[in-house]
Image (cartoon, rainbow, N blue to C red; front, top):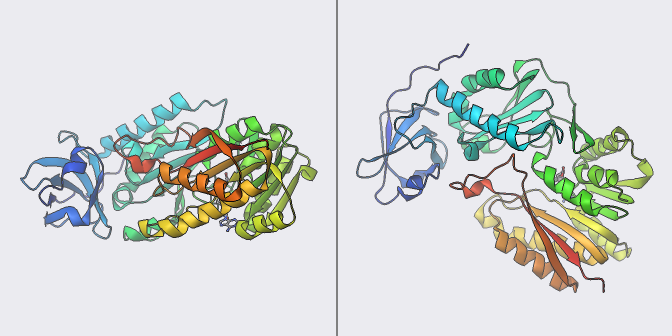
Length: 407
Ligand code: SAH
């Protein structure tokens, strides 16, 4: 049974002159500064008509009075009603895509819905084996939550339960409070086991980062594994050691996992046993990457492979300079710690840091370290985290594989 939310009051948003260009290009965000007038009394999450200054119809969107992103467009087709069936259709499309691109032989965990890029702004849905985990990050998705959960129940095969992890800061910007807990079906256990490319991972879906695991790094874990045979590896910002397990399974000689979170490293230790790996092949260091890498440098330690996967350093444009220094610092230290012929896998998940700038920072870091290196590959988020061409912001994770010269 699908619940229909209370009827929306008709309301419309009229943009200032010449502010309709991005919507006409199907970018889904309307910022508060672009709005000339609100007609009617839309409540948070209500569907509104978005009109150009001359009255031309542009989009249906969800109104969010507390957010700088005042409207998120649901549809650019006036004939498409924003009703329960709209959500069924968009969810079905998102699930069909995953079915085509993610083989069950590769993994039983993936992102089913990636917000704006799947035409559902503010909605994240991940699957971990038989458990579904959702984040409702916008007033619009919050308003349609029960409909979305009902359809996920209908459409996701074999699920045991749907769990909410809307405990993220961006909800504050939408005027929403954090929300976690079961939404439907059974309550998940504290930890859920998944498999990915022959590796087993234990995911804390109730308390882990994001919805519990960095699904976006799946293909990059496989990429690191392809270089790992016989390597001494440093896995900095390890979280629960995803890269370490993939590398050890592929024959890495030894890995050091560094993270500031002791509980994340506890799970990393569990992963070693879960994958029948010898614990002597892994060290775990709880601490700050910036200072530990300096200590390793003064101890003259060196590695064949270094993975740098820091948290988001750039939260707003104003952070860019400070963040760039942070990226450069860790990358310079990594270049200093690499053995001749060694390989650096360096990432930035800051959407506000462009690829060109990231590459330049890594180049400057190599220069300062006195190393010559070449880029072997650019890396991206895995394809179950797609980027709609009209929403470049959806592409946030970038990585470089750099090999330093033999001498
Ligand atoms: N590479 C991981 C994801 C990393 S997320 C994976 O593939 O699963 C970033 C991690 O960096 C988090 O686990 C966080 O606890 C850790 N972290 C943040 N700042 C840190 C610091 N200064 N030193 C060490 N770890 C840090």
